[in-house]
Image 1 (cartoon, helix red, strand yellow):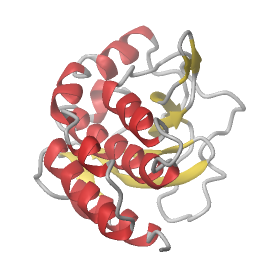
Image 2 (cartoon, one colour):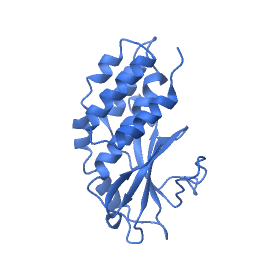
Image 3 (cartoon, helix red, strand yellow):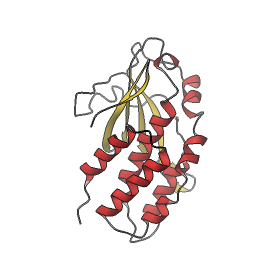
Image 4 (tube, one colour):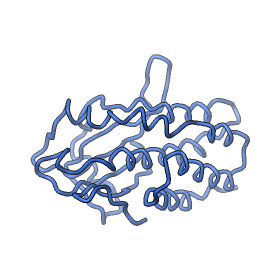
Amino acid sequence: MNFDVEAAYKKIYELVASNASVSDSMQQMIRLCELNFPHGDWDALAKIDYDADVASLSGWIPDVLWKYPDPFPEFKGLFFGLCNPLREYGTQLDMYLAYMQEYNSHKIEYDWLFVADTPYPPNAFANSKSLQQIWDVAYGTPNGLNNKASRPLCLAFAAFAARSLLENLNPSEISRRSTQIGVVVGFDTGDILTIGELTDNGFEAASP
């Protein structure tokens, strides 16, 4: 059975724009994925406490902003990047926060995402338990879900977590020179979504 990536992305946009909690949004994503590709491991993924993880990350963005203040003449956006850092216990999955000098919500290609070769700031990882648990379940057995779980669910969690963590912030808390900040989530290797913008009215979700 082919996995319907377009349906998964559409669902992410729909849930980012909703008032559903991160856990409720993840449950809906998991059931959608399960319809696409039935497997016993979806139940284990549904048992992860996504809301508790997001609550534990409440100080992550303010801490990064305090340690690494507005670095660019024109600050355009925030990128929540998903990657596989190699740590003491082997390959893991986490997300980091990076600042964007460019932002173009109307351009499908993301060649504007990083003007520099290296994202800034360095080592701004969330240390998310949920992302690691998704990775562990997806790749924990020889016949596991692998990318069929890790790609859509990690992308979805990053989007829902970003929305939740940014809801109480405004552009002035991030940059003194920006009144509108784009919010983008995605893997370093591709699968990138512009999920909304942070304005003086708070986080505003994007259309698919």
